Length: 132
Image 1: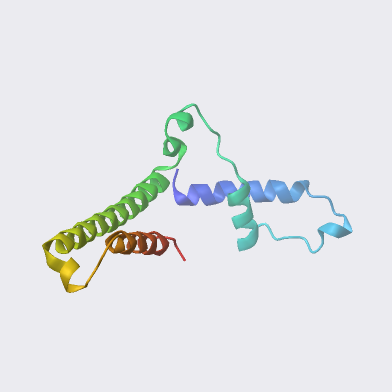
Image 2: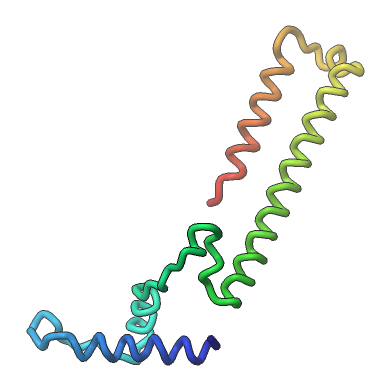
């Protein structure tokens, strides 16, 4: 189904919905069927028919354009999340290696101070991953 067909289908839904509205004073001013707000509301309210395939994989019932967009979005998010986690682990290993190689003496670290630094680093990394 093309984008134009989808818009025409939603305009039919809006037109039929506005024809079913009562003319009570609470419904005034009447909403134009071709207004952007009415079109957006109809698109949001329109529930696609779910088939058995949606229980196996969510995007099988979606249009090819939406599936392609979701695939690209998922690929981008997964790539950046994996890269960020890889860099975090690499940096963590570098800190541990430096600690063993003499950083402990240079910074006068004693006891569990490396563990405290690692915990603070991991907490900062976790807080940094929360979207704003």
